[in-house]
Length: 392
Ligand code: SF4
Image 1: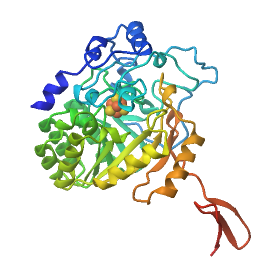
Image 2 (image 1 turned 90 degrees about the vertical axis):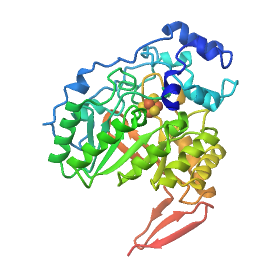
Image 3 (image 1 turned 90 degrees about the horizontal axis):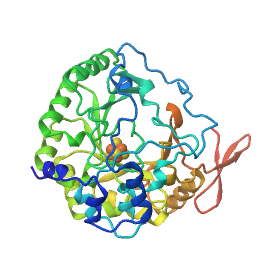
Image 4 (image 1 turned 180 degrees about the horizontal axis):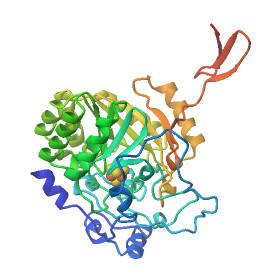
C-alpha cells in the first residue's frame, strides 16, 4: 500500500529535513535543544487508562484549575515530537514564513510556555469516562481511536496524547466505550478522533465502526481527520466505499490553507464526495499562516467548490509552546467581519473558541446588535447601516 510506505518514510530529523531545504537558525535550534528525536509521553498514561466508565459527564464549569495566574513565559514547554510525511513537506516552500512549513517544522520558540498554557487545554482527561472516551457535552462524545498522526502539527492542542506510543484502541478499551455508550442513550453523536483515525488500516477502522454501530445502531459518527491534507494517498476508493457503507457518517476535514488543496488532496476529497460522504471542514486560525481575510476567503471558496462546507474556524487553544500561533481574538473577529461582507453563509464557518480547562465551545462571531428600546432591537448591517426589527 502506497500510503503505508509513505508513513514509514516520514521525516523525523533535521538531517531528513535538510534533504528538502536548508534550515533557518531558529529551526535548527529546536533540533539542537531537543536532541531532535523526542517522545510525546509527556503526560502519564494513567489518566487515559484509568478512566472509569462509572463516572458521570457533566456540563458544569471547568473541573480543574490548571491555569495559574503565576505562569509566565519563562516556563519551559515539553517538546512535541517532529514528524512529517514527504508528501506534505513537498508542498512547503523555502521561505521561513511559508504556510505549510510553519505548520510542520518546529521553531525554538515552541520550547517556551506563555501564561495560561497547559498540557491538556481542553481538559480531556478530567472528562474521560472510559479509556479514550471523552464526554463533555450531553448529546455527543469523543472517542480517541488512536494516538497516531501522519504529521505532528506544531500547534496541536492534544499533544498530551498524540504520538504517545499507545497505538490504536484495544479491544477491552472499545468494549468499555461501548458499555458507556449503551448506558448513555442521550449521546447521539460520536466523534472519532485521535490522533488521526485514518492512520488505521481499513480493516481495523471498519471493525471499530461496526462494533460501535452494533452497540448503538443510530449513532451519528463524525470522523475527524487531517489525512486528505497530509497523506491524500490514504483516501483510497476502497476506504471511501467502506465509509459510505457505514452511514450516518460525516467527514470532518482539518484544513488550514488553500496551499494544502493540491491536485492530490482535491482528488482525495473527490473520492469521498463521490462515495456520498457528507463533508465539513475545520480550520485553526494561525498567526502568519492564515490570519488574513484574503487567505481565508480563498480557502473557504475552494472548499465549497469541492463539496466541503466550512464548519468551524477555531481560535487556537492554549496548548504548551503554541503561543506563537495564536491570533488575538479581536483580530479574529475583525477577520470574520470582513469575511461576512465577502462570503455567503455557505462559505462562512463559525468562529469559536474552546474555553480553557474544559469550559466548552463558545462562538466568537461578532455581534451586529447595537441596542434596543421598548419596541425594537437595533442592528448595524455589514455596510454599517442601522436597521430595526420589532420585538414581537
Ligand atoms: S492531526 Fe490533530 S491530533 Fe494530530 S497533530 Fe495535528 S492537530 Fe494534533
